[in-house]
Image (cartoon, rainbow, N blue to C red; front, side, top):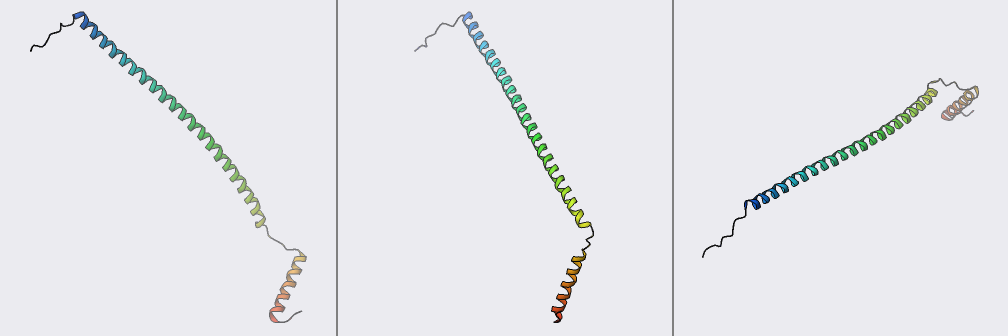
Length: 116
């Protein structure tokens, strides 16, 4: 059995089909480029947002560090002021000396069995 032959399209029809394919390829290429540009813009926007967040976090961390440094400096100054009290020589009053002598005499008497 013979295969029926369809007439070949005219050269104008072929040219039109090729033009249509080339136009579709051009549109696809332009769409890909537009998508790539849009993706690059989104990436840059995301990077900018990340930089803003990072900068804000760094400022907050710096504020916290400064607050802790100030609190530490205040506490250290307070400890140093308090330690100055302990560096001064203690001189008991006459009343304290008398009470101490009495307490020692009482303890000595109790220890030896001699009570005053």
